[in-house]
Image (cartoon, rainbow, N blue to C red; front, side, top):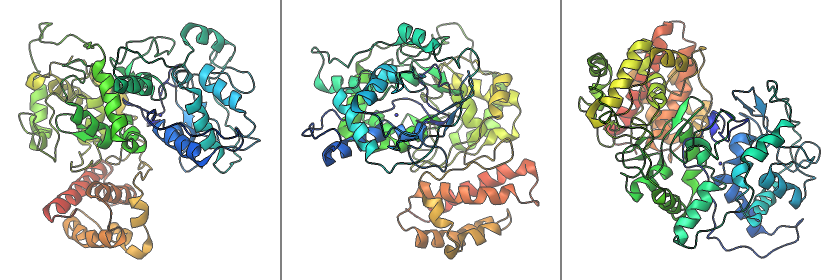
Length: 530
């Protein structure tokens, strides 16, 4: 499936920064009855519909669609440690897409990583995982892609560094790391576990993020699902370990998290995984989600690190505690337990206790958009020093029995500061992020609603009154919009207004944006807007 959106895509299977990937990505619907075969050039409607589902759960569009571009027409530049690599057009255009590809061409590319022209593909396309996918499922995806309008979109040049720009070297990579062959179910395992394994280890390629990788970027032979760094986010351990894995969570908690991005005890999704859930996992059937969970729960429990209680660490840094009490405790509470349904608990939170501190650092720096019933988190790190951010991160990861390694440092915080921005933070280069995943912002931006005009007049002095005027207009413009969608859409629309407001000092722009988002959320909750 993309995320990165939002990587290390050349010699790893990680997905781009724009989309993801944080865990549990992708899914196949093995339970669906196979359609009656049609002629290769005339796939039946059942096969196309099935292929659309598979392409959606595989999040193919995430890598093969650039911002503002046509779906599947390519053009996205994937940032990798070896240089930027562009994604190709996979619409049925005969000049610039895959319109001349046969069934065998398409299957060979996904199964062996060799394109129609006989050249080896960079494993930015995760064929080492797709090799496990059945031919029927692969051709269903092709049938769907060939049902799309052809788009003439030549591939942009990649800019890989030597020697990674020499494709001949990929044959050696394939020899080392590619293990060809479709998935074979384990007859000793229940059908649900086998289906989950087919999903996770095949099209889902969850290990592309959660396995970690070796020096050559391979993830297939790295630590199995024990966590790994991807695009400066940390994809946590998803083995059945009860400390930093998923073993302590119930099946229902995990399914809810995969479907919505929030679950009691698990916190709120952030980073690449957020887009994975929005674009892919939220569209899966409950049966498929339960299959993923069943397989992950069946994996050997392996802790990704030794608890600091076991290594003799003396306890949380008192300096970090002071930073926490001054900046975080008003919402997350002194005991770290948050506010039920509004502010997530930090106690035992999977992102907090992950082996790497990157997730906590990123959230402190960039905040989190509203999710379901949960409030948006402000980008409080904007007004903190790198040392303060490192101190509070280590405190959170050590307090309340979390016992994660206190490895955050000011250098890492400073590096991540330069690349972290969300809807809650104007970017380090001084611009607001683009994006409207729910589509609500576009509806509210219609001049007929009068919402944008009112937003232009919002100041700290009149913010509450202005929001009270705006919310009825929002409901009139989009009666079906959900609470979190309204908060995020108005924040997206207000961000460029704050960004270009000469009356607001640069150091106060993000705090004003955060305060606006919080006030919108509070007003919706207080007045019962649903």
